[in-house]
Length: 306
Image (cartoon, rainbow, N blue to C red; front, top):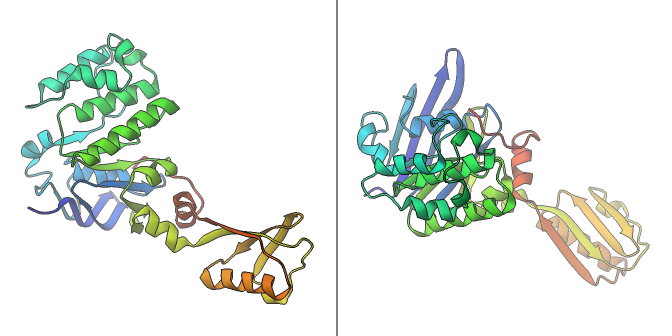
């Protein structure tokens, strides 16, 4: 059995003269969580539509759970969980009716009542879909995606509109899915969410892959964002550290920014020693996934459409 739940090779998606996805390749190993990030127009949703079997690629190939998403669509769909977007269900049906309907489509569904309770929808079971808030609709959409016991789940902004408690409940569910061997491919505009949940991250820009790796690999490669040093107050930087910015915010509390790789940190500490700086504490702040993302995408935060 192939160890990859999703295998995309040189996929191209065009809309007329516009290329939305320009030869993207990626894999999602079974039992892992991959976060697909990118600004509006980066090509994320178009790529997901190919993987979900809703669109044939204009070039390249996609295999999902070892199958062709188009040719093997009927065999593949019962094994997938896809988070519905607004408008994907009858607005006059109640939350309970919607979830029980989708459970009836599955060969071995989870207990709808259990999912309703777990996702905090018990008091809303008899509420019509159109009267649910955006966050409540998201929770119901997540329940619909999970009720059929899928092997692979596609989650498009799973916590959009949710309050803090619901967001953390959703995070725990996703972590439990991974622990149970379920593969998750998610898009999110919350970079802290991606950093917490994802085993692997793919950042797209203008229809191409700009970076890929684990959150730790991407942040480590980005280097150190800030160096804090506590030392003797009143020290004045000289020409030896001209390539860095050193600011004494309060007496004896120095912040150093700039191109802070390992060599630069060593140079800073050597300078403090040379001027008898009497260093008593050193702290570094490594760049976050959001810092990496903003650097790669030109300063815009993650979007979630197309």
